[in-house]
Structures are given as structure tokens and as C-alpha cells.
Length: 146
Image 1 (cartoon, rainbow, N blue to C red):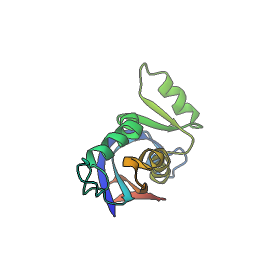
Image 2 (image 1 turned 90 degrees about the vertical axis):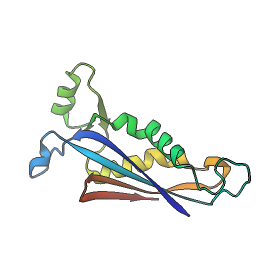
Image 3 (image 1 turned 30 degrees about the horizontal axis):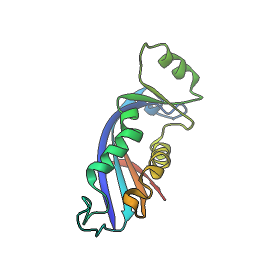
Image 4 (image 1 turned 45 degrees about the vertical axis):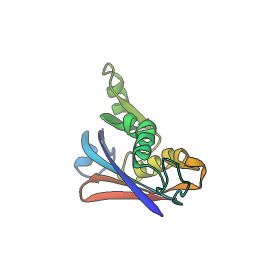
């Protein structure tokens, strides 16, 4: 069985060597869809009986591991030195420094890598992160799979 939880967050980024406007500092209303795969809990009396995982738990884990860190932050590539230095000059600025250029594809893969361990074996049964779909805009997204 597969289930999906959708969350939204706002973040800024830039693609340093992009050939058009994405090379400039800008932001997006990102949407992340987290798809889990597992067995439905059948244990009577268990709060998750009839579920793969409670949707509120999916949200809580995603917020703690990723969304709260990225929401209203600037996601910057470690080697984009001018921007790293600029953001460091802003007092108390929320900056997330990444080892990859913050394209939709890379952000989806980073999100998958951060979240996969958090959902594994939840509720004492086999549960795995199947897919992350990250929308950069309503019409553009990237997916990372197990």
C-alpha cells in the first residue's frame, strides 16, 4: 500500500550558472509530496489500525527533519561563494548551505536522503519512503525514488 502526504514551504535559491533568470536570487512556494510504502496495520487497539502510518505523523517527521529547516530559508550551493558571503553578512539570516546546486532535482534527492531513514521501520513494521515529489512551481517538479 502507498500513501502520500503533501506539505508546502517557501524558500529562496539561485542556479549560479543558469542561462536565464534563474541565475538571479529568487524564491518559490515549494510543495513536497512524501509517498510511503508499507503494510496496513491490523493490530486491534493500535491507534494506527487500518493505516500504513498516520498522516499527522508523516507531517511531524517531515517538518522536524526538513520542512522547518528549509521554510523561509535561502538554499545556497556551498561553492556559490559570493552568495554564501552575502548571506553570512545578514544578521540572523536563515541560510541552508548545500553540497549540491539547489535545482529541483537536487533538492528532491536531498529531501529523499534526509527523510528515508526517518520513516524506515516506523510502528515496528516495514515501512519505506517510496518517492519524494518536489514541485518548484505548479507546472514543474522532480521526483526521487527508492
